[in-house]
Amino acid sequence: NFDSVLCSARIPVFTIQNSGTGKSAGMKLIHRALEQMKVPSLYTTKVTDASLTGSFCEPKAGKPPIETIGLLKKYKFIAFDEGSVLLNEGPYNETLQTTLQTVLDDPGQVVRNLKYGEINYPTNTTIVTGSYIIPKMGEIILSRGLFQRFLTVYHHQSEEEIKVIDDKFNSLCNIGIDESTTEINYFKTQLNGFPQTITIDLDDSDRIYKEKIAPFRDEEIFKQFDDPKKEDVLVSFWFRMRIKMLKFALHYAVLNNKKKIDYDSLDYGFGCMAEGLNQVMQILEETVLEQQAYQINREEIVKKMLATSVERTKLLDRLRHYPGWGKGTNWTINLLKELERKKIIRVNKEKRQHVYDLFI
Image 1: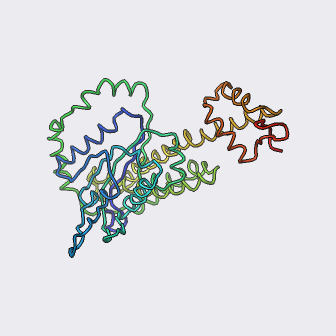
Image 2: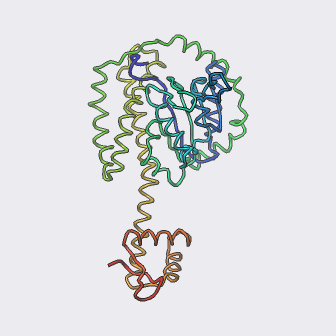
């Protein structure tokens, strides 16, 4: 801990990249390395709210309920390889997302009120998970508070990177952790010698704020506030990333055997924070804003076609064959219904059923 009050040094990670590009291999290697270091670690492809937090078994007559121990109490590190389940809608996923929000905050806390008792304990478990990018990724970031609690790592592999992954595929899948035993033992020795208390140099903290943090906030973050919804999300990311910056600075100080979190440590932490925020903004640019642009363009196309009344079948046919339209019949029908609901177009019943024109 920084001062035994502020927060722990853990940094939960949510990595977003294409399937088959190394997410699972990376998680497995970290898990196996931690096992070698005798750190309680779990790699899994499935979790439930009950398995994470623990639960109570229905008691037998005259006996108290038996508590089952949750993964968050049992393990210090959990690699969850199917993070896409956290992005889906539904009661199960919403419960899991709500549980994780208090778990990933500092200090982490597991709280559940169950039929046979209350689950309530602190947790310092580090969670690493990931997913391929899904069409609603940007909308999920805007509407939920889960991603703010992770360090979001977003990466598109270049053609050269894909070739390297492909060339090294077999060795990545079959690498033996024993090959790294010497390095792991060395790292364990180093860990045992790390200082238990590290303070922040306040002068260096003020300097990094004036020289880098404030300019980045004003010139990069505030410039994104063209959309009120996007502004609210980026503000929530901003304050949580400030905490992550200190955590990265702490990691840097520890690994370099420093007694204080100095300017160099804070500068390293700032770079990690800035990169993390830039990647979040990139996701928003490539998903939400792109979808909004497509929607606006398609609305404009419909409006242009309805400068004069058009029968629905003909309108659908024209839209499907419009260059770059790229959507099927059902999607197009739903768009027309949405434009009706928004009173942009209407069915002109004075002429005959299923003839569209602009709403006046």
